[in-house]
Image: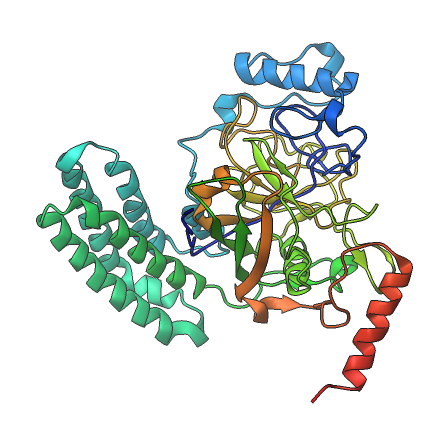
Length: 461
């Protein structure tokens, strides 16, 4: 009998039409799912069951230029001089990229407290220490623990002073638990119990992350007026995505925990949470899984996104990118279009299970409901220097059971996506106005809207 694996934390992706073999697009572009045509299925089916359209000359040229620059570091010739050249990899890569989703989320918080970061860093470095074979790793782990403990003792006052006033008591309590936990980890190391190190490290980093979130006092900026009435996630939220896996003797179903970051992508994350509350994705199949990304979100019918019942049109959201060092995201333009070639994004495509919106390649503001998760690096998308950052809106990471995303295949079913925390951070929810809408029929939309209003006026007791 197939095993049932409960992944206690989970995450999603976007539309699936591609610009090249390595990159997903929406509606015949990057990360959009093409509508299924049974008459073309045999001819168009690849080994992994996905359909791809032919390259355009422009796409081929872009792919060749990017590949040449990334591999050789040589800038493109004068034909490309109308646009500034991409920066050298030596400029883009300033150190080993952070690939852990938890660490990426911690560093993405809008805080500036050096003392808590000095505690966080050596605890994260334990992961590298554990790559050393055998119990020899514990000598390095011990140094990490001592460094973190020393940083906590020396910086505790500064850390507490950085807590939001309303959260000081909770933050101080978490710091006390962190201090005790470090003593327990030190004892684990002295007992030479290597297997117990990683679980305790995870617990301590959870305390650190909670303390850092308690340093955020309200939402740090104003969303532009033109997007202010959209569903917005002003903070963090978490969802559990339960996937029914077919044709896999080792895995029957899995639950993925996904953390959504509204601090850095309030419009994008808000749009997704609103759809989750509508049960938009429940029962939907995985529509793309090719070893590079997993993608879903293309609804039944001719529409390629969510049909807003109030307008009977596809609801789209603007491209939203938070640049590291900036106080608010940029909208409607890629970083390349803005000339920000050396800029780093706050939520990079570094982690296995990075979650982002699919959109049409040449329409920045065409994302709607299609989402995707990045599975691995390719030759053109190395962590910390890839050409996805700044072009597609990342809004979360799978933080638990992310490795099982590699086992998900086309046709596997999302049984449910449920919000487990952060609903109070959702502003302007539209799901309360109308129920679950997953097709584009005007009659269907009208009937569902009428029924929703009738039930509100005539509640069933």
